[in-house]
Length: 82
Image (cartoon, rainbow, N blue to C red; front, side, top):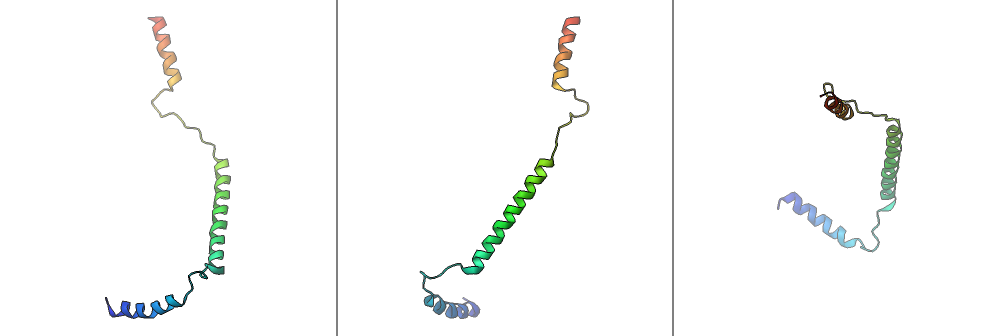
């Protein structure tokens, strides 16, 4: 190990022993971060919903290809004339 990591470990190990594992909580900062993330997700979903309602998409047929219904009717009319 390097000298820096050894020094860091010697300073952090006593601090870890002082903490009571039953009393460690995320605290106010953890709650605030979680609340901000929740509010951001809610606002993004609301915005996405609004944008999705505005979408009016109808797929146009590719140029050069006839629609399937017209091609079926065309083959039936060809059979009648033949």
